[in-house]
Length: 256
Image (cartoon, rainbow, N blue to C red):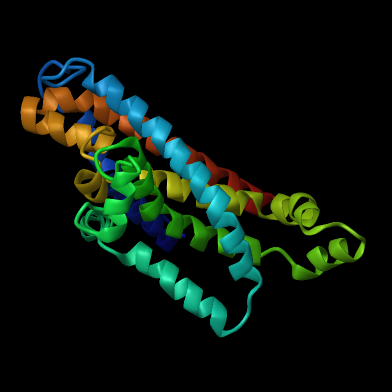
């Protein structure tokens, strides 16, 4: 009994230490300012981040789900090769990725020059912002989604196929319902990764400024009072989705 209480006490201390940074929200830094030196910049940054991150998530799901499904069903070395390639995008330092993207799609590159001739802005544009977010987040979505899809018994999917259901119906009626919480976790992981990206986006899409970049601009130009309102919004848009999904998954496991 004594060891149990000591363990719990240690966990309480650890949890308090882990969550202590949130005490920074109560630290007096002066009167909070909604904007920095540019009127409307905070509201614009919120709109940019939420709208373009939502677009990036649609792309992640549309492209990443079929890839994850293929990897979940593909045995042997082929899967290892594709997963190794995907892991490169996950392990790449964000700042390095941003520089590489700016070079690969810049005017000094043949492909980038061709895109510019077509009128496609590959830097400091909504397209550049969204593309960068997709690059930094889709690997996380695929890896987590593959794990969720691989946990669905293959026999159930085969039986559904033998009953005459086409592949898309097998996925809708069998695979997706059984993997939905795992796929939701994959989505939330990609959401947080994309929404919070700073280094790569700073290089490729300084404008339009999303929340991470605008927080940095406000900090440089106007100090902490201009940072705090946007920081609170940033936390409230980033944390609730993965937090709620994790609690749902834990609740489901407890009742299984």
